[in-house]
Image (cartoon, rainbow over all chains, first blue to last red; front, side):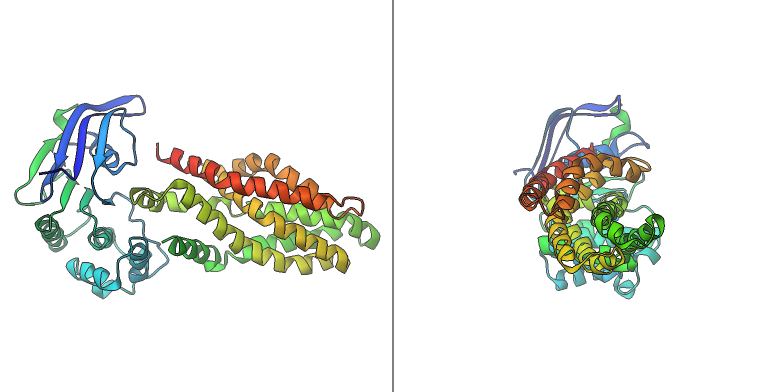
Length: 194
Length: 213
């Protein structure tokens, strides 16, 4: 099967520090890979490399399809009601309101649609970012600590969303320092690379 | 998609009363100037036109720290980059939104400001024409310095210093339009403005790319 995301012999240098080198991975439709490891192991850097936000010091990164990214910043306008903040990205991604509705349903955010983003808690903001990812319709999901601050119910919804995405032929690269309980998950221990 | 970006920038510029900040600053300078040099109408008329230009330039630089940095901190720039939106396009949209968001109120504020500085109607007309020509270039420079300094702490002060030398030709030819013998000034102003407006998106786009490294 052809890969959606392929990293070939990639090295990453941040500052003067070599985070990892010789790293290769490929994600085919339906596959998911869990990047695990302690803080500073290079999980976030690998996600940013895969997203094309960082250039690898060596090796190649190839993406075959659109990318949706969650990182530590939610990228939602704090002064807007949640729904309008999400609608902005829906317009950028050229998806319609129903798609956003369904994604909000999946993360149980409908009751908060009119609440300004600034008033949301950390976990709620992560759920909102997840709505953006689900609604984008991108086949490649890059999730950097998506469950930070989420309660158990929200985590279960996240796991369900990942399962749905994989069933629809999407690929997921998931960085998390703790196990999320995603079934059928390949692992890459970043701590062992250093 | 570009329209969504443009409206977002405009909404953020005009929301929360930020629209009035550069305009108030502009009027403040126009009000303070006669107090400083005295209410001598001929003197005000001679020096006032130049003062309007200086005030307009400084007003354009006032919102530098909210043009790029909040978007960078909120991850909006990263999200756009992930979607494959070219940095130059992001910069061009920001320049367009700043030109409208700041240029329109500035042109409106020009009239009371000119009255405070004893400018007659012919000179007001010249000033309005000149500033309208210069607004895209001023917006271009503001976004450029905002992009260059978004990664620095206390960057907005440095931003002003960065831009000032580039803005000097605008000041010279813009104020030169008020000189009765300076008939070529409007063409030179147009040329300088065009040059800066064209360079702006590419230079600011490169600066945005640099923010990610």
